[in-house]
Image (tube, rainbow, N blue to C red; front, top):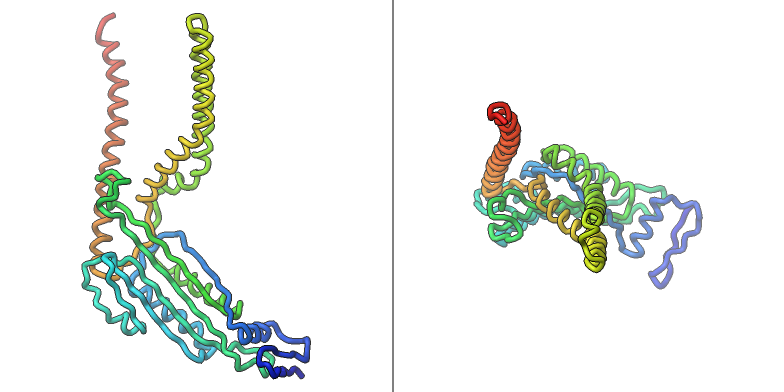
Length: 330
């Protein structure tokens, strides 16, 4: 029979039997140290998260922990707006009846769920040790300001930056995995936003583009210098030829920094147009979502017209050259 004898100093436990189940060891460790492990996860896909989605998350987590009969629980929902205002709700019922007529946009929403569990185990003396768990789901969106000088004026406010992350503090690993699977299942039910096919392909080959452009710039700079020297070998002086060769070599070596900067600027601009996680809680969120949709649609139409115009102009120019040669006598 397993037994636990508590020492006089109240700081150590003496276990008389080595055949102790792992779940009992976890309970004892949590009792002695009060420490918990942490499991963090970041979801990179883009989602549209509404108030009903938060309610569904709350119901899923409560249904998950109900069979374990938690000794106590606490729910807190923090909702902050772009202008700096916000509110903290101590229950899902209060959050459900909150005023959503505000015209300001949401910036952060954090859902916290704390509870105490007594995980079943085979050691009688460890069966009453309550373990603390905490689930935190953070949803953030941040719209660029109109005075963002890093972007041209005509494409400001076309996109926003957002993320969804979770943090689980736990004592029992199996319980943590169940919670993580529950949250992942909830994530799969959210409305997702996918970027255009061209943008997805550009992101997939970001590393290849950086490497290719770097190699291309180096090769072109050195080859151009060599070709120029070879063509003008008779008229160019040796000193000028050496200076030009050294300049082309230096340009080739420094091209990595130039190309990396240009690539970073290009992909930074693309990320402004790529969809990201957004909150739709207040009236301002809905108005903002509608405004972004209209601006993206208008911008896409404008870019399509420009692209088609360039192609048509190119084709017309080619045919015009042929027609001119056929009509005008030589």
